[in-house]
Image (cartoon, rainbow over all chains, first blue to last red; front, top):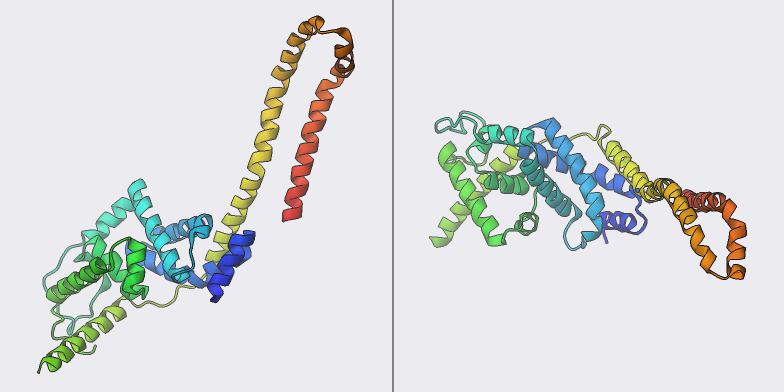
Length: 178
Length: 120
């Protein structure tokens, strides 16, 4: 049992809000970062992060302990994101805007740093989510598969497709060891 | 030759991965009271959940008290058909019925409150 699991056990057994507070302190940065990357709006992301942790509190008994706790919380965060996107118009507008930023012509990363916003703008939402899980949160393909309810093979092929898009759009095939 | 091609592909892939990681990389976000806010909301929710049932019971009982008393009063004439020795005992208590019900409710609320304080 790692430290997180000990804290989870305390929360499940005694509804220990202090133990849960410690879990929030440990993982808030990663969850907020994930949601900021996804929504590209800090205050919206922080609101969603709060909702995510409240939902995690309600559902913590469903955490089986087989994967990492952060993997499970990120899954909750993703579900929270999807649900609020469906429910709230404000979120939808921000996300819509984020997904339709002007696509510039082909860029060369050697001349100009690969900008996250421009990179996100060329990807579909599905590709964005999976790249964020993989590169911003450092989740394994298996963990991404659990978080998104997609087969691991699909996750791999989406990553491959996204990288292909980035490569084509930003001409990074010649990029060496940046 | 084949392994050389694979190695080149791996190197390109590694370089891409490093580049993507650096693009997505960000400094840790400071807590700045975030976790305290979450814990505060959770504690408030625990209290609301604990109090919801007893409060609902007390409010419900308060609303039900008047009609319940009226119902009992309305049913009293029916007691005439029951033999007098069976009726006599409750009849003596009936004037204090409201006090008894109120006392029962206060006792239940007290027990619940005590339980909450004990658990906290």
